[in-house]
Amino acid sequence: MIDRSQFNAEDFLVDSTFQQYCAGTDKLCIEYWEKYTKAHPAQAQTIAEAKRLYVILSGNKRPLNQQVEALETQINQEIKPVKLRKLLWLKVAAAVVLIAGGTYFYLKPSASSLNQQTATARVFTTCSGERKKITLPDGSTVLLNAKSSLSIGAEFNQKYREVILKGEAYFDVVHNKNKPFKVYTTDFNINVLGTAFNVKAYPDEISSEATLIRGLITMEALNGQGGIITLKPSQKVTVYRTLPAKEKTKVLKPMASHPEITINHYTLIKDSTIVETAWTQNRIEIYDQDFDQIKAVLEKWYNIEIKFKSPEVEKYRFTATFSHETLNQALEALQKVEYFKYEIKGNQVIISK
Image (cartoon, rainbow, N blue to C red; front, side, top):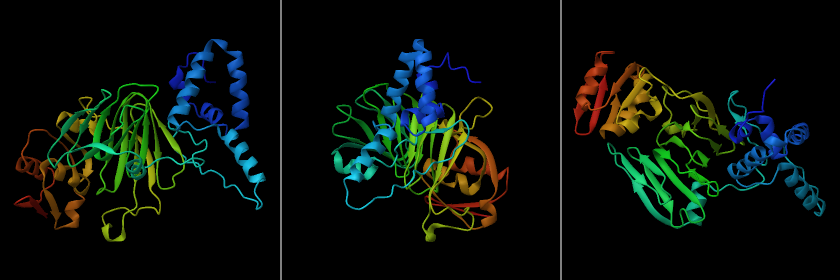
């Protein structure tokens, strides 16, 4: 039996039954938590704070039972009957829970709608091989990786804290309970109170991911996935996108008709380095990956374009660390693991067996 007597607000927030209670989606959960609150008055303030955080992170929506009651009233006034569709639930791994209360009863702004609502005050960009540190008006810091852009609105930190990311960035967000920090990408949106996390969302790659280092974030996948995922520190969510037919190759695994989501922990290696954020320390960490998988990393790091002449070479697997190595030094190090030939022509690298 779970001992909740020492729970803090975040512990309550990641409890799936507590989320269903806040969302109003399960009668038994509602009854249980109402009784629990009465039986534990010493935790009333903590529970109230957890409920308040839930409302903020789920977009200030009313509980689902209240929304349904309001919707039923509206339906009864209509001449034609309306059939309500059931909400779709996203099943995730044990440590990750859903806040699915009323996900489709409101319209959540996307990156495109944010552009329409808010005039862009500034766009920060980086080229291949470049990284840039940005301090936002609220004091939050963003380290922008190569070939990326970060857009902020003209009214950033006045009423809202919202940014649009294309590419990869490491965020260290200043806590402000009244102004949640929001990151919009083409594949998912992230709500934050105050925390550190990494987002990788390059439009030319087959997947996007969010990795939580500390604090608490919620992430909503777009394109009909139907749920809000709550992440705890060390967890990573990867969203695989559907590629146009012309972009698919025989070396890529088939994509589902809708983006596929996987939940894992970040990769921790020998010296306690987190692979997903090693780039913030000016390091490339390759951990048991196909040559084809590390291709995009090398291209952005060294400002090159890699062309494979052999499908077999694309499947060579490597584990390596690079920091101050030149392109030639990096390729020569990889050759010692799995031999291949390479030729450099300008900024193009042709790799063959």
